[in-house]
Length: 260
Image (cartoon, rainbow, N blue to C red; front, top):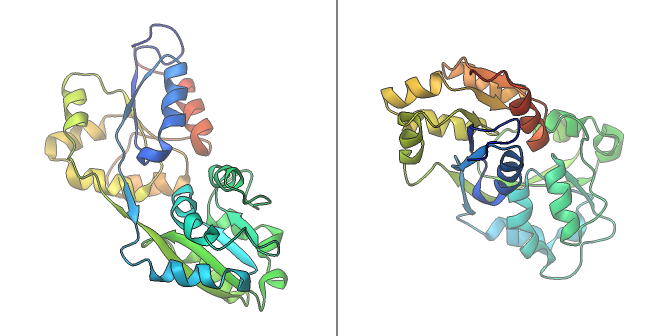
C-alpha cells in the first residue's frame, strides 16, 4: 500500500466489469490508494446469437447504430465487421466516451456521443437523434439483456424503426463476496465505487446481515444520480455522487474528507 498520494492508506473497491476495471484501478493506484477489483457484473455472450447475426446481415439498411456500452461494442463488432468494413453511411452512436474510444480503435470512427452526462437522456438530446433526423429511418440498438427501454421508446415516438439487439448478458458475481467480507472484517475496505445500479442490487442480495451493515457504513461513490437514487431505494445512505465516468469517480475519491 503506497504511503504517498491523496489516497494513501485507502483501499477502494472497483466494481466495474473485469474488462473495464483497469483504468480506474490504475488511477487509484497512481493516487496512492490500493484498488480491490471486485466486478459486480459478469459479462458473457448472448445466449442466442441469432439476432446479432441477422443485424449483421442487414447492417447497411440502418442509418444509426447505437452501442449502449463498451461491452455491447465488444460483443457486437466481431459479427458486424466479419462481412466487411463499417458502412460509410451508417452513423455510430454511443452513450459514453469509453465506447467511442473502443469503436475508434477497431475501425469505427465518427461516433456521436454526449460529452458531459453519459446516459440515454443525454444521447437523446444530440442533434443526430432529433425527430426530424430519425423519422422514417431504421435504428439498431446494441445492448445487454434487460435494461431501460427509454432510448428505444423515444426513438420510436420520433418516427424511427428501432431494432434492439441483445449481444451480451449480465449476471452477478459467481464466486460470492468473500474478498469483500475479508477486507471489511480486517478494517481494510475504505470505499466502494459503483457504476451500475444492477450490480449494486446483486451485491445487496449477496450480502448477509453483517455484510449489509458493513456496506451501510462504507462510503459509496457513484457517477450518476440514477445510481444514487437506486442506492437510497436499497436502504443505503452513505452515498457520494461524483462527476461522470472514471475521472469523476477519482476526483470524488480524492476530494473526500477521509477520517483520520
